[in-house]
Structure formats: C-alpha cells, structure tokens
Image (cartoon, rainbow, N blue to C red):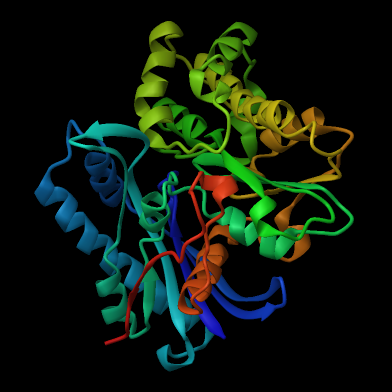
Length: 388
C-alpha cells in the first residue's frame, strides 16, 4: 500500500515527507521509498514555532493559528511529495503525520486529584486531509500518555519491525534535535522486550550555538566542520554530563524544554563566547556532549544485557562527520553504520516510521512499546481524519 509519512522534529529544519510502498511481512515490514524530500521552514515559520514553544511568548491565539498554519504547510508537503513521486491522491491510501512538537511535558505534575503528563503537537490533520484528499492519521503521542506513558519515543516500535535480527544485537540511534536509542537483543523477536529511550540532546545544542555564532546565517554544523576547528573543553563537558537527566533511568523523554535555548544560555553565562574560535570550542564540546551522552547511556543502562554487535545511526546527526567519528571511537570495536546502508535513508527514517505507525493504527494494531515510553500497556495510537 502506498502511504506518506510527514515528520517535523525539534531541529526545526522543516517538514520531512516520505512517499513509501509498505507491506507487512509476518513480524516485520518491507519498505520501498518512492520519494523523499525535506521542505525547509523559512525564518518566519521558525519564529512562529519558537514563540509558541516558549511559555513566556506563547498565547492561546498564537498556538491556535499555528496549528492551522502548519496544517497548510504539511498538506502542501503531502501534495509536493505526491507530485515528485508521480502519484495521485487516489493512489495514496493514507498519510501519517507526527506534526510539530511545541511542548512536551513528560514529568507528571499534580493537578486536582490527578498527576498530569502532557504533550502538544500541532499541524491540524483536518487541514492536511482536506488539502491532500488523503485520509490522515495524526496526534500519535496522547494515547500512550493516557496509558501511563511519556508519549515518546514512538519510533522504537518501527525500529523493531525494520531492524530486529536473530544473530546480531543492535543499538539503533536516531540523532535529530534530541537523540534517542533502541536496543534490539539478538534472537528476541518479541517487541515487548524492546528497551528504548530518549537519551539527551542530539543536534539541538550544536545547532543553537551555530545559529548564535553566525547570527542565524547558518542553522547547523555542516559535516561537523565548526566542531573540527574547535577544541573541546573537558571541564565544561564533565559539568554538562553531570546534568541530572543523564542519570535518570529509562524509559524517559525530553525536548527543547530541557535542552533548548535556556540550556545554551546557561553554557554561555559560564563560558562567554564572542569570537568564532570561542564558539567553535563550545560547538566541539556540545558535539562531544552528544556523543558521550549516547555512549554513556548504552554503557550505563544496556551494556550488561548483551554484547553489542553493531550501532546503526539515523537522523540529521548521521551527516555530522565529526560526531560520527566520535561515536565510532567510543563504541569501538562494535562497527557503526548509517541506516542508509540497510535500505532506510538516514534522513527519511522518521518520516517512514510515521507512515508505518499510521498503517498499524488503521489496521487496529498497537504502535507503542512500554519498554520505550513507560506505558502500562500497548495501545492503538493516533486520531484518524477521513479524506473529505
């Protein structure tokens, strides 16, 4: 069945759109990627999202309008990827849209008689369905939260479908704005045994430092070039790795609320940067933070369970050569590769994942994993908006 996956992450680089052909194969799924593109956000859109993500600048009217505005952009992305793939709306069975996270609050807070976790993804699916003419599944996280989970990460379910192997223990690492990891123990094809979690910052801190250094002329560290020209500060790195989140046991989830602009503000208060050299030293340190957090997470929480046969990386961080080399050094002798080498392009993986999650929803199958989110049970995810 042909489907579209739409994903916008915490890096705020744009909307990833994947047109795929999917086929369930027993305990796995076969994926043929027919077309993929990232449709970048312009500066104005990024500003809207950041304003609505910060309680100091957000307002009810801004959030309401952003939801429908992003619905238009996501609907437009769906139409563009259909055109690129040479298919019409009648040929596409459904769209799976993650939307854009503007706030994620996985820690429970007492309200009245309840302890409340919350999350908010925008990009109105009714608009996506209306503009594209395709049934749309969206808003995947709340069902997991209602079942006692943190609502994220959800991609580990798809990691299991695509990558579990009877002979190899694999650590699947996705490095977007936030990094998350999935451990797949060899010989165990039971998805309920999968352990996964958010790990900490992926590209988020690096990107914010690059934006500030270049006055937003650059939004990420292309190939890790700035980090390669800097010198990591061991004392600062040790202090950052002492952040309480890294010691919390999985499953856990996080986002911009913890590792966004305020986190970078705190770094710059203790280590002011005015020159490119000073910023590049901080970018190198932030990149080391991502690498050491990923490796430390695996070593602390998973290394005792099975010997590691390989590390498979996806997401925008897979293009950061400096980061990839750091990870390769830390995880050696276990080999490391991009998911692209396994037929799932690194940049398209999460968009593909939400097409698969939408397929599971429409087939009445659960799409969360308690070992990834902490939910009390598996549940069917998402809300379905029929094509008009």
